[in-house]
Amino acid sequence: VTSDDAQWLIPGIGLIDLHFQGVPHVIGAYVVPTDDGVALVEVGPSTTLPALRSGLDVLGFGLGDVRHLLVTHIHLDHAGATGLLLREAPQARVYVHEIGAPHLIDPTNLVRSATRIYGDAMETLWGAVVPVPAEQVTTVADGDVVRLGERELHVLYTPGHASHHVAYHDAQQRAVFTGDVAGIRIPPAANAFPPTPPPDIDIPRWHASIDQLRGLRPERLLLTHFGAVEEVDTHLAEVDRHLDEWVESIERLVRQGKERDAIVEWLESHVRAQMDAADSASLEPAFALATPYGMAVDGLLRYLRKRDEAR
Ligand SMILES: [Zn+2]
View 1: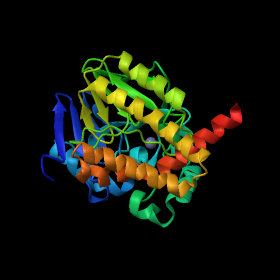
View 2: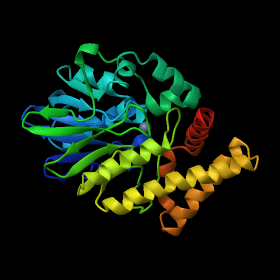
View 3: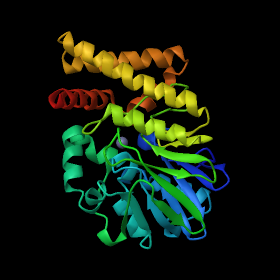
View 4: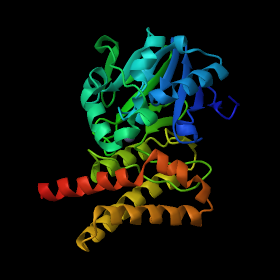
């Protein structure tokens, strides 16, 4: 492990690169030392537990020092390792939105729906998904304050990407742990894109959540995919814009009678063209790992179907 894999971003907030599928800058976990043990924001999937362990080691900690696991939502790339990790950090508490909590405690449905999406690749991508003991789970809701010794993180309910998504605001450091609601940016690429997997993409709620982030006037966004963004307003505006562009384009392609696979091809070439234009073509594979194009299209098609049914 080199120092690129685990570093202090600012005093009191460390970032570990989990090297998902051997690729840098795809999935990160944040380290927040407190006078009540180490807190992690996001833990990644079980397959990257060795990278989490060695990253903590670089920063001077072990998994046994971890007392708090805060997850923004339960998707496997953010929280898949939670149950397995607790075996090595038996004192730790897990913080998750109340809608997500039952699926950490009994991951049967979560694993079933992920298997529908990933099939044979499940084990390679995510590894084991182990139940989290209910007595170690603390549910959080909008406006809650998570006290970590003398440090505090404020909970913001930020649906749009997932119905149970929260962000954690560190007011003292003027930083927000944004999970997926502030989109994906693979550094050093300048492009920012939204991850839009099924099943509960909701575009108006997503925009409203981005507005909430903006309202905090943070100095930096801490993305899970990947790292710190200091050009906060430009970044959030680009995520907003891409959400609307993708929905409008996909609606048009559906009206033209295009099938799902043709729409996936469109999205892939659209993203590639923009990354090319920003001289970031080499980072496109990392982006596609963070949000596969087929999944992104399926999530948006499902959103459009649900929206039209509701009308
Ligand atoms: Zn997600």
